[in-house]
Length: 104
Length: 144
Image (cartoon, rainbow over all chains, first blue to last red; front, side, top):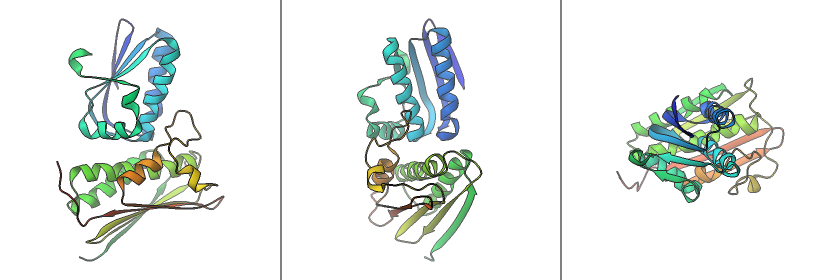
């Protein structure tokens, strides 16, 4: 998966589908950057993501929980409407910041 | 319309979660399910099959999950069957935020319940679990 680091912000560009098949890889990739590079803010760009289920949402919740005590933040950008609907049911929009790519 | 039945048994591997929901989605598309309903069907199947692999078989890839699909003019019936560890307390497991893993959200059954018209879970400890989900096709409101 494509990613870039700007100052202390990690940008991850998600494509395709996020389920139990690739959830662990995403989790490990993000955690490694947080642990080794002192990343404070993680922005997940979801414009090209077309599927997410609770395994994927679990990665988001887990990263939110990991960043919180470090004084960091998790943000999600460009969430497609049908994916937002699923996120809404999970309650994640109450704790995670949603942004559009312009402000990322 | 003749009842269309299919039965797909596969290894308890994560990549088969994708194939399972694609199959259900392809069947739904043939029945002219609207796109938002197809998305919901995909999530429900994904949750049921993920549960079978993660919880039923504790991520052991050497087991088998069966996906049974049955489509008629009235409804789609989807069954996901594993012969894994079973759920000791189905009622408790189906509650929101019940998860045995902090990285997971405990939303699997909530999504299945919300996105399907009927959800039934039959489980026996050490025998396995059968999840039965129904999507009614009549009175579907076309949207999006």
